[in-house]
Amino acid sequence: DAGVIQSPRHEVTEMGQEVTLRCKPISGHNSLFWYRQTMMRGLELLIYFNNNVPIDDSGMPEDRFSAKMPNASFSTLKIQPSEPRDSAVYFCASSFGTSGVNEQFFGPGTRLTVL
Amino acid sequence: QQQVKQSPQSLIVQKGGISIINCAYENTAFDYFPWYQQFPGKGPALLIAIRPDVSEKKEGRFTISFNKSAKQFSLHIMDSQPGDSATYFCAARGDKIIFGKGTRLHILP
Image (tube, rainbow over all chains, first blue to last red; front, top):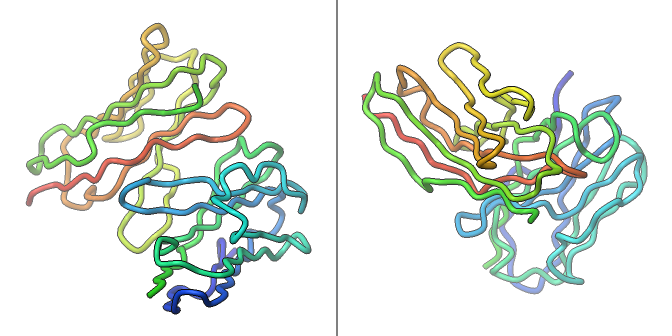
């Protein structure tokens, strides 16, 4: 298996632009997580899906952030409009089972820079 | 109650020494405590984990010590090597996994 796939690996954009991050989870996994990592705040859970349904989005910072999972093999995290404080590394992770309680396998991350 | 507090933020250890990272939690409903290791430019990966009915778990040079009454657990890396230089996250599992803020470990050659 190729593991969790994220794209793009790096994204540089200007303030106010829309940014879309993409994730393909490991085949057979039914839970998917989006995390944001910064030096100041560490690893923060933004949202997680189980069987393509959003279960907990309490970590989504504000309405500028949205996430979708249209099918079991694809998810997107969108920021519109982007701001410099959104600059971070965004990770997608997947696992098998409910409630996100099993080992999570992380993708390589997308480094986002908002100028 | 959902927090996992991790210390230190950063740690420098001589090659061959013992690296110790500590974590504390409040929620007694947590039932599984994994440690994740992250190398620069990579995502975190599961390193070792323990359940609260066990006081210690060892895998090679990595040992988790667990103190249920104190609600604390720690990662010990014996004979630390430069290849162990990474960021380490402790975590706790309740209805979801909560991560500590991470410890950046640097092993001096």
